[in-house]
Length: 237
Image 1 (cartoon, helix red, strand yellow):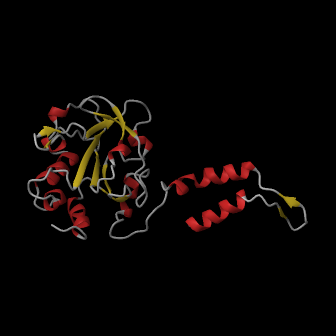
Image 2 (cartoon, helix red, strand yellow):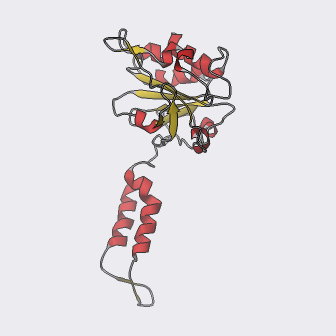
Image 3 (cartoon, helix red, strand yellow):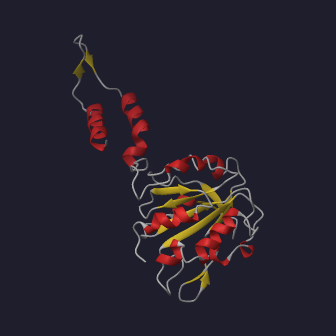
């Protein structure tokens, strides 16, 4: 696909004029080149390159939970508000090239302050269960997010960081300082991230992002077993 795109681009910018069947000289206009760039810009820049289904790209049956995050393609950023300080930030900037996996939890309409809500039960699973990929694949003594970095984005805008589980603002590093940069809520400006990325508001979802910033899988919030099975296929405890 990339080679074909390069060939088409080369043909468009070639300076030598061509002739059609009637013998009339035809030149490519700048409008043709601009239209090609607009059509192929994401592919040329690498932001719309997609990987086919494999054990590192699964969960296509759940694509409908987040239609704006295409499995196999790079994580498509959008703005959300950080709960700790009210600062709007692009979630894509959290995907640093540091070798870590990332799980973005997009909460449902159930409040995460409710201990029986689907997002709260997922957080409890990730932070406590022996079958949690976070627990299973993090070296003893290492920061809890050193292998799998988890973020939460909620629809509720009346949250305070102190009300949420410690796992979402963990003590880290040599001095055990709290990390206040893991919890967000949908921006009050319309459209918010849930609308922009087609996230099912009633169900929510989790989006798993590979270290190369491409989306690995999308799963329901209650898919604990499926999440564990996904990582178990290639990770070493």
